[in-house]
Length: 365
Image 1 (cartoon, rainbow, N blue to C red):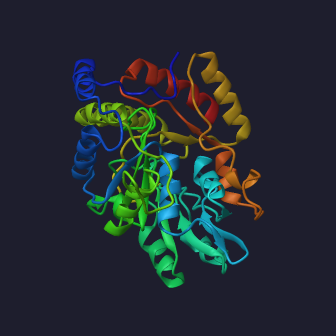
Image 2: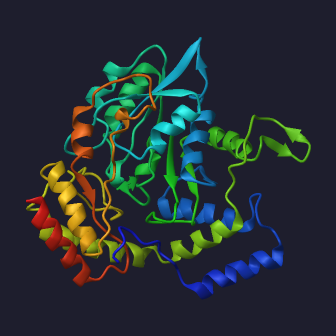
Image 3: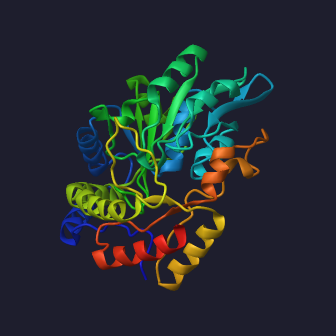
């Protein structure tokens, strides 16, 4: 069986040494030394400041909404945030969970990211934020989105779940927006088994979030903020530190898989148009089949060969009962019906890649 992805497991002896330290200290959570170390090292590795580790990527989004004043009511009606319909469901459901109505704006049919031209027509008096997604790590048009946000006094929270290590014009893509969130789920390029992070533009937002993820506690008997439990624990941090040590190996292995796919498939199947100012992190390899019939036939053919692929993202989020603001998103709906993510992970051998390419080409052209 060839899975669509495989969690990267780092050197076991190194992980055991970190775990031995956890046992010796008996400090399992509440901003332990490994969480502090991982925070420092990730800030250095990513080239960012004001990074906060949290328990998972969905909580990262929810905490960002709370800290930046997006959650809650606007007069007697729910607040709204403009977001993309072409994303994992958590992008929209996290808004709804926080009492914010997701309002969808269609994507660019080539880059697959939220199209800035579709944002402004969706803005109302209830709009508080724009929540774009760097889809498969591809950078959004950050300057155009920033200008719209500035004009209308809106917050920008980037869902950067796929954007670990991505640079834009020579700097971290995560520096853009009032906040950018990351997912460190086991299937991600970098992972802590479960986990996530928020990168804030402003230090004061970071400090508020620190309190918020620990029940609002500023001391043993002092509660200064409405909070929740969203902390990362020491075992998660131990895994993250081990994986981070081996990121060069992980990235190089994935690059080889992507390069192989591109050489064999890119001239025959539609692929994502990459932002020219953005460096890929080799996290995903999506291709577009000619129609939904071809996609379903290809999925079945791959399955028969013991190969797992994924309809990612499907369905288009505007077709789900998440938002009460109903709309048709032509580009997102068409893409979600035709797109397929092929297996990509460190350790995927060349023979398997060739088998995947052969079946995909047969069904997709």
